[in-house]
Every structure is written in structure tokens, then in C-alpha cells.
Length: 261
Image (cartoon, rainbow, N blue to C red; front, side, top):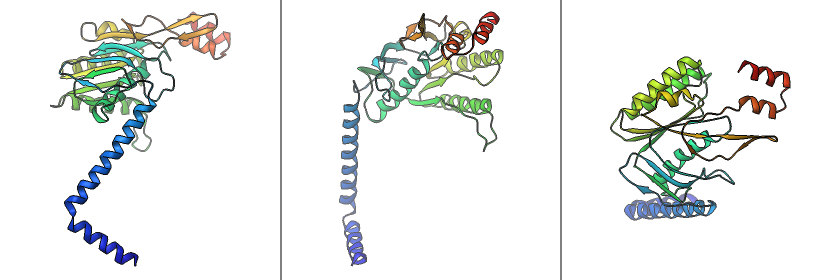
């Protein structure tokens, strides 16, 4: 009986193929609309994005959609280097921009009060890991990721590129030199690039080519406090040693580190 029912159903589908595909598409679109509405309801604030031809990202009360109690940021970004101390929020901010750029062009929904972008391919180099199976070290994986971005940006499709902690897998001098060269090359292409970095030297090397933005912290008697707010200009603070002290590292270690600095 089941086999006969299956054959009758298959015969009906073949007979009404066009109607079946319309129904299938309608159910899919309805399901997507319900999912999008549910996603919008879960956000503290959302908006429908605006699309322009300007090479800039404009956002108001932007947040990462996965954060339960996010600190929002507003601004207008062109190609930019975002610097800041450890745990200050720069990586989360860059990821929030990337995620919202994708959501804008897929679900037509952004985790922000307002979001404007040029239609673009969003391409990233984030959370890079070494690969034992491929035999690639961390640095080799990084440069492969950057090569992918450069090749895509050199194509005909406009790209918005996001790079988190560019080339952190190598020594300081070569990292800064290579990072500056890669960023300069991207700036000459039809793309917008936002990179997060600890290397404040990049802010001087890229002056005139990239905007400088930063996140910072406040040192208090109780420890290190962050406001996670985007600020204009390059970062001028460091907090790695203070964070060691906050995590109960011995004074011998933190004091020795301060002396060497």
C-alpha cells in the first residue's frame, strides 16, 4: 500500500511539476519569513539596511547579534585600522561589522538602529588556525587567508574585507612591514578594508591611507575597566601586564615585566 501511494504521489508531482515547484518555493519563502521575523524579535534593536554607492559603512547603535547585553557603537567608517588593548572590544566590533554586512544582504535585517553599506562581497580573515592535516603552520594559514582576500579584491566584484589581528603569527618587525604592504595594496583596489591590530605602528605607517579608530580601558584601583566604545584616533594604551596582575600572577612576574618595558 505504501509503495502504491508513493507511485501515485510521484505521478501527481510529475503531472503538476510547475505547480509543485511554485508551492515548494512558496513554503520555503514563508518559512524564511517566519525565521527572519523570529530573529528580528530576538534582537534588542533591528533595522532594514540601506544600500548606497559610497565606499563607506554607516551605522548607528550597532551590536553583535550573539551578545546578550551588547554595548552599541555608532559611526561612519571608510578603510580603517582599529587598534586597542587586549579585551578592549576591537575584535568583537570588527566581527559585528562583518556579520551585519552579511545579514544586510541576506535577511535584509541588521542588528543596529541604522546600517548603510555598498552592496559587496564580505570576505574575512578571522579565527585563523593551524592545520595538522594540511601541514600548515599558523603563519602559513594566515598568509593563505590574506592571499585569498587579495585575489578576490583584485577581481571585478566590490569587496568589504575584514581582517582580525593581521599577521600576528610572525615576528614584530616583519609583521608590521608585511601588514603595511598588504594594507597598502588593498587600498589601491576597489574595496573597503577594516583591520584590527595590536600594532600601533601601523597607525603611523598607514596615515593618509586608512582611518584610525581605537578602543581603550581605564585603570582603576579595582582593576581594568572597559567601556567597549569606539573612539577616533589610534590607541595609545597597553594593558597586558595589568591583566596579568588582575589574574593573580605573582608580583615578581608583573614587576619584572614592567621593569623590562
